[in-house]
Amino acid sequence: MKYKVLLKCQVHFSCPIRYGNLHQFPTRPFRIVGCGTSSDPFHFAESGNTHRAIWFYILFWEERPALNVLLYTLFVLIVGLAELPRHAPQWRSNGFRLTLAGTVLSAAMMAWYGSGAALLAWLASSVMWLGYRNQPHLKLVVYALLTAISSAIRTVPRLAQLLVLPRSLDGRVERAWFYGRLLILPFVALLVFHILFAIANPIYSALTERVLTTIGDWVEAFFEVFSIPHFLFFLFGLALTGAALVSVPVHYFADKESRLGEFILRQRDRVASFAVRRPDFRAKRFRALDLRKEYLVALSMFGLVNVLLLVVNGIDINWIWFGFKPAPDFDLTQFVHEGTYVLILSILVAMGIVLWFFRRNLNFYERGLPLLRWMATVWVLQNAVLAVSVGLRNYYYILYTGLAYKRIGVYFFLLLTFFGLATVLLKIWQRRSAYSLVRMNALAAYVLMVGLACGNWEIWIARYNLRPELHELDYGFLLDMPDRVLPVLAAHPEVFTQRHLVHKTYGSWIKMEPATAAQRLQRRLTRFEERQQARNWPSYTYADWQAYQQLVGKKL
Image: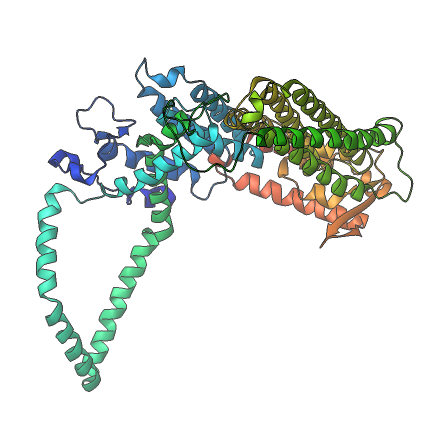
């Protein structure tokens, strides 16, 4: 049904530039990806974008993100890459190549697992790749993301300008509009007399009712074929495909990034002297001795917090690192949740303090700079030790209570923390700028996000939590996992009788009876088999297909 409806939703495109209406578009030229070899720059918009929107409609209407994401991504990438010149700067851009690989990998993970992490990585990678295709000289992934969004915002309204009638009907529509405006007053008068006659003449009223009923039947039959949700979704695909393949150059973020450097440079400028390029004779609140005062404040702060952090790390090493065994009444939740969050916050604050003191002039205070650098380095290293303690807290929590999404996320956050601390050391010793740190850490966060997309985390969580060493099992959490986990749960029926099953409801833990758990599992299995049989090929994932084969094989 959706394919028949779709064929009735095609829209004809025409090109204003063909008639010289250049004033409708920005002064800067914009690039059309997918125009082929046609001399008409809008050949793509006229003849190809509608068919590509049809492809989007077929893949995604009433389908979940799965195999369709991979197919649509390959289509957009092939079209976009095929139109790039052989010696285009995009081919030499590291960001372009990295996000291209990330887009393909995350799209493949969508077809394999269909997880939320893969979907997030695919969305971010796709948008960033479009940003690097637009401005290949960008280095900061955040600027690439904003560039792609800005280009899409400018592209979609210009695509709407191309939605015009065929030229053969253009004059007729103008004439119809002209005469239609002249007939407004006569039609109003006709409506008034119609109401009066319908009230006065019952035969005329019955005839009018039959005519309106017939018209209503025609309208109902029309909307059985033409669906507004279908048409709106088609327009959404048209806009999304156009935004992906039509690139309007956005130079704002590239210009902004060009003013930022990787290193802090000493600027002997903006002083009260005509000997510099940009003199500044305004009153200064920052006097000559203020730099030494700032140095003494930084030195005393690093010294005091180093002593405090040494005490805290000593306690953690003695308490957590070696031979930690919680008492029977020990609150592991508070130990991990509140303690971990506070320690992570303290690490972030410490990184911010280092960035603040090494932001400008202290990087060139030669008299006390070596000592300040070493004290800041010791503080950074002590924060790394504190991060290890956070990781151990999370390890013991997993050991005694099982895996969960946030507990895995803590380790990935700690990886970013270690990388961030390493970049802070680069800032201290190499006079790196804040832009350099943001660039490197944003890139590391992107790579880590793509790495998260490659993991079959739900299966690993289920297998770990079903170990016999865990006496208390949050079975409700496992039942809420995606369908690909069901074969693992079905393979361990012994947990109903050998484990204490619980589930969380409105913030409190409630015991789950074995019979209730078995019934819920059976309902999930039945619903999964029904859904898998009813799914169309765009919604297939390899993990769900494999899970279905395992369950059907066991029945046979």
